[in-house]
Length: 332
Image (tube, rainbow, N blue to C red):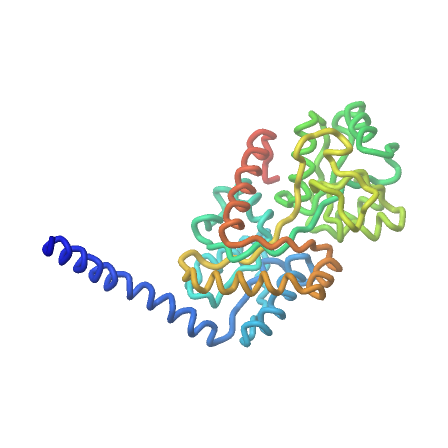
């Protein structure tokens, strides 16, 4: 009995000695963090949704952490340049990515040979912070008043109904491609370099339809220059309360497409730092003034923890992989 007791005591002491350096490192990382400025890489140009969200988060985190969080726009290659930079940065919590996660998930599947990072293996999710809904809109010259009429018109005019997008791998394109594929519609995709040029031609009638973010389309809808047919979210949204969801308007089950945004750290970042940042972000997003500023930019606050963020990103990757494969979508 004494020998057994001595064995278990020795084993416990050994385990504690083995574990203690790891615990000490985690405690030290959290105790000293942050002791210098943090870089928040925004992989898109100034002015877009990712930039607006990133600057709000940087400003609020600077106050909470008592250290400067510096927005750093590293635009190019549909967000891949900035994402790749963060993926290859030290995993110490001082370089973070303000990710346009839906776009990253689409590009990961659409440009597999081109992407140099792995969205799941090379990053540790800190938090999903919000989503931007999309809305199906048409130029008023299209003789339809609702989604059922739009579907009927598209079927009666195969290959003639055009739809714009802000880019080949943009969520705006993929939402329409998923809708088109599920209903068997023959429509022609016209890609643009950004939402601005696409909306200009849509309002002007050079293209006839589009799935666009609500912030980009709202002013044109309110001015009567575009007609809103349906929002792509699971529920109706406060900015367009009279516009039905795609599921309501068509009967397509579980149609829920948003542009999702979140903060990521390089893989291997100490969990203590990730959890601290995530808890601080959760507190920030609960503030009414922050929610108002986000909504003014068309962003609906939707906090998810690191674990839930990981699950949501995994789901997003799988969903777009299936859509791209089934609909045979190319990065044209």
